[in-house]
Length: 334
View 1 (cartoon, one colour):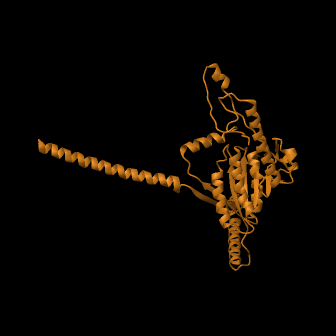
View 2 (view 1 turned 30 degrees about the vertical axis):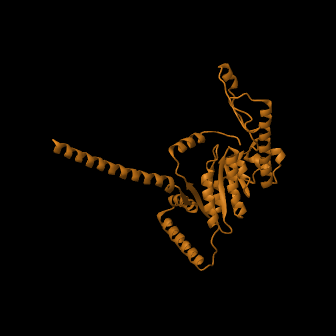
């Protein structure tokens, strides 16, 4: 009997040891996968937009040509490419200017700034004289500190004397326009929404509801203006006055920033919080030309090489869910 229990105990020990070893291996594998997702999942994607434009044209052109015409064109194209490469190798033709195309799709918190800062850091390390950055900008605005940081990232390009063009196809309002006005030039589609140089804040107050239900609420602060308005406390006229003062101060900073970057804008006329369509924005000098980003890039592809940059960040499922809700909003003020 003793022998039986001894053997049984030995068997259990081996089993537990084996299971523990398997669990340790699985834990190590899961840890490696997690580290890879969190650290190795972030990367910069580069797309040759010039080649994409050529491929689009070639696809259509070839469908319109006969087989013989296609062969002749292919031979001509190959000969031209070979001659260009040979001339460039001999230094007869300087390298073509490069245009780096970035996208910024803004939400309330300007979360796209996390990718923008990486893309700009990459450009700053390789840009040479004559290169340009085109920012395809779409944002209805959001929190001040988020869009302030995004504008500061664009300022890094201006500080290095790299030409910056902002292209607005649909909307660059409030915080979006704060970013756009950093650019050397702003392009807008005729019906793009531009402007909204203003500041807004709102919050509900449940104090009367709490009192009605005999619910006490206490708020303790150190500092006279640590909290001006609250959701649950009883707001005072003094608190409201201080809150409005803070809004006015933020508005003054916004106006000052626009005036500093676009001195041609009649700031008193446009800093009313209104927005305008592209055609009206051109009259007010909020933008410099009416043109879609597609037209501008196609035009520049004739004399420049175009590269689209996207810094892909690994986001957890909660971040992706929050982003999907943010994309559904129509407009959020600065």
